[in-house]
Length: 158
Image 1 (cartoon, rainbow, N blue to C red):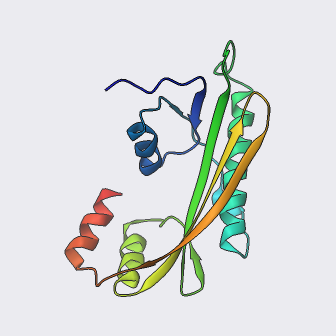
Image 2 (tube, rainbow, N blue to C red):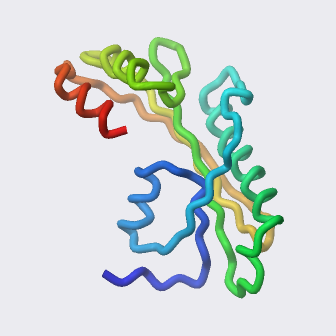
């Protein structure tokens, strides 16, 4: 399968397999560069403010790293940096990526037969012009009872 022809370069500022899969399935060629920031140091009360701030912080960190590399030198076409973040709001508490398998298992067990909100943001930055545009979206997710075998398999995937 050939990659989609594009008149721009994409840098995905994320190690998320789901985000990589989306771009790959759309047949875009892209480079992966992670921000390596301390996400726990950025705190906001509202989940939409948190995911927006995290996506922006990731973009700033990656742009700072790019200034010290040759990635953007001699690039004739526009280069887009895509950063994003997602959290879950469960019983009024913002939950970020679980720290370990035990926490992941606890989170999923809690969702079993219940519901939670997923809040995500995306920020696209044109590295040539500096212009950026982003937004956030929220979805309510309702779960059937989740059997322990399914929980175990989900925890092992990640």
